[in-house]
Length: 354
Length: 106
Image (tube, rainbow over the protein chains, first blue to last red):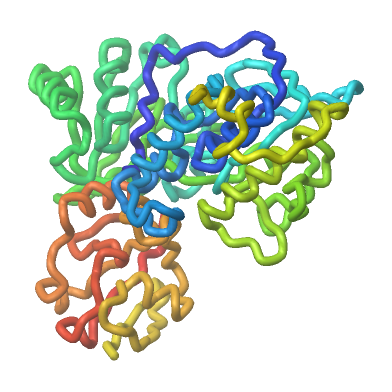
């Protein structure tokens, strides 16, 4: 299901400087498998993902849908594939940074990379692996005329500080957990709060819905069944919205609106890192799956090369070759000996099976 | 083959022939119908293949499942005949189906 990210009011603050071998951007199947392939070569990885859990599209778009083309697994759900990969990479103790997005990526004079997330976490890494799939999941923007002008000023897709909403006339749109959680959290500080949803049924957790209904009863929240059709205001400040209801149309005065219509994928900051792109995909070679920037690799759905297929199994292959190339950067002196997990004692030791 | 007609917001209409067993969304994509985005590829996970089923066809096409209703919460300007076209199977029973493409997908 979309909109399963909980935008919890008590968001964990990032921060700090972390030095590591590899930063993997994206915790989807390819990013997770990259941890494994790098781990076999003694390359330590940190994984950053904008979602609040591993799995990428497998977790966000189709956790329950069966996948039929993963080798040796005739049928596996997105959720199960994610769980199996998490199990497989456990021996390598990857460090995850969820609900964070890499916003900046720059090469330093020493050849390493400096990365900064939107939560302020900083990394210094020898290699970067972009495994960002379709891009970062971002909140859907309702197709209302002029909404861009209000964004960040009076239209918000998430709230970092509840206090910033104090005294406002708030409209929340949606019927999922995000809409309901924010209704419950913001009603106490708002001057007024109106929850607008297209039907009188809610996807959100039943106990949240129950709490909301109580608030509607004691008039601390107004529930409207309808759909927003237009915005009014000037200079980024919303003054009212137009709502289409079963009985006609109504204008609701408000100073802030929070629309929750799930998530969509956008390439996002990857576009600003000076990498060669082709139709919003990162161009790589097929020997190392490296971008035009030495030390930055791209694997999985986000890359492109002649003959590219957006399949999970192709991404796994790309991860394996990428890891070999990454090893030559991180351990330039090391003699590369190809080994099988089936027979190599050293690999088996790393996997914790010997 | 089953005939399906897609009507654009500007009134332009296009009738396509679809193989039974496909979904209406797949029929639309195969025929490059404008306005059917199907971002998630038919997993009932995005609401960007939203269509309005013509009044005369609503009973034959049937109602949205609970999961589809949940997903329709993410569509824009949902109406009485709103369905996600990836959830409508093409069959002889809906030969001649008429659907309207909304002015905007999310």
